[in-house]
Image (cartoon, rainbow, N blue to C red; front, side, top):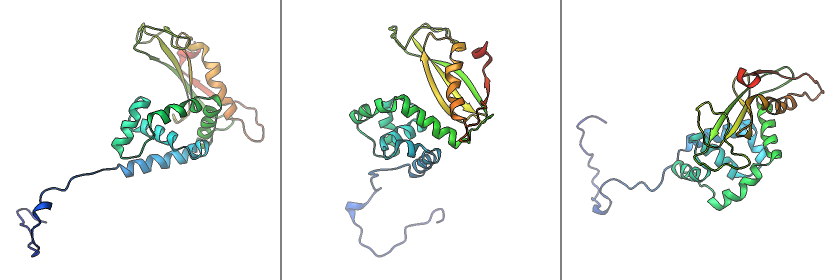
Length: 212
């Protein structure tokens, strides 16, 4: 190809009906989705969720664009991946919210990170607020670094020394950061136990505000 090059006459009759640009009927970010799916499998989530493609779709969609569960369906459509219906998503969520499922995901993350006795783990706490004035048993006004008055929840994140996430724990919005450490770190102690029964705990590094 060169600049100013004219059309090559192939001696074919011109089909007026097909002249002009071809319409785009669909597109797919196949390389992106393949990379995310491979990472999902490498971490071991495919073993935890089994053949549940709804969970895979929800996890990968939220990596592409962190958004609500309803808007995740839009992300899947833009990527060109078939997604579940919203009613199907709603039916599956209670199963994902169980302590057993969360523990299985954490165990998979710990295995991928090769967490073991005396491993260094990091723990930090933050808050997420809700744009509402109505509190409930979980969303409650509490200490806010942003000095907000809305109901909030407290989030504790446990990672390995490289920052790879191992587990996320949610607490009531009025729960003090200093009182989340024992609960937030206990999964790390359980995950780091070796098969041989080594009872040494991982070394924990924490935000000083969480242990003050």
